[in-house]
Image 1 (tube, one colour):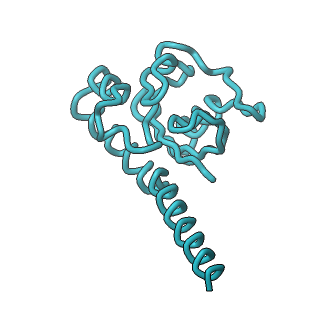
Image 2 (cartoon, rainbow, N blue to C red):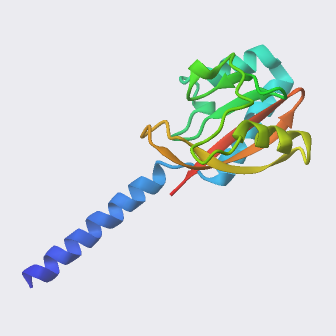
Length: 153
């Protein structure tokens, strides 16, 4: 009886932990919706205002759990970054992920080709600072592209 109660308690705790963990991660639909919000602000308020808002972690519209936008120009210059402001102003065209993937080049290729799509790569999770698998949705936005990614478990 005691073992059964202990086992049931462990299962309950594990399910709560898993539910809590899932709530810490954004979904693909939420990532696409955030990209659309960035594009709407860009169309309404212009590049400078949008880039500042994207990079300002206090703006909840663009910062939700592990979801945040990033904006680059088509040469690989980081214009705005919701999680790593130190990247702003840097050219990351030749940046490789842990597996050697030129991720910015792939994001540019999607933006210049079909105009939108998903790219898989490895990137530090802002919540854990661990390198994790990530899928980012990217769309062309004028002379730039905007992306928002989801971390995959």
